[in-house]
Image (cartoon, rainbow, N blue to C red):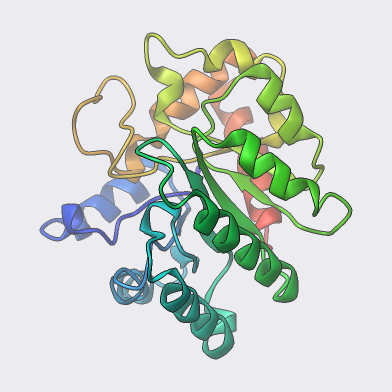
Length: 258
């Protein structure tokens, strides 16, 4: 299994990270991909990925909820990391737009998103997109990249069938599924019935969005097995087959050996 999106470098894991990593390995997790948040998270992100080199892989990006008046300074940090440590990062993420809390920085989020999409093309890196209450805005930005090699993941997808179909219009994009699919009131199982398995990857978004049966507790990479089992149920396939297909898609996107 591959956890394509996990924040194990956050303070929530400060006291027991070795145990968390050990449980992930024991559960069968072979790779953990870690998106950056903003300038404050670069150092802890790189430290964890250094300590668990070959197992944890860092991305660099500016998260939309960190877009404020100082967004230009934050973007310079991302650009500096790309220039000075290009070979360190496997993707640009997480990036995107988040209008759940308010729309104060809507225009700035659009500017930041476009800047980072341009860098993804310039540095030939995939992107990991965060989308919350912002699909029409993100889709409009992505439309201008339709005929480019841009590739990536729509992380933590919880949208409608129509939104899923619009993502699938972009042949180089995958849909990231996490513990939300296990929630009792989730509509994802029905939506996924219209999505080819080959276009999915699995994630946890640890420490958030913990799957059933641990919902309400801190999430961790080992819990990805519960998402895997639910997705296997939705597709009527074995967990082994779902793991094989989704892992192959993830490794291909991040350009790693199969």
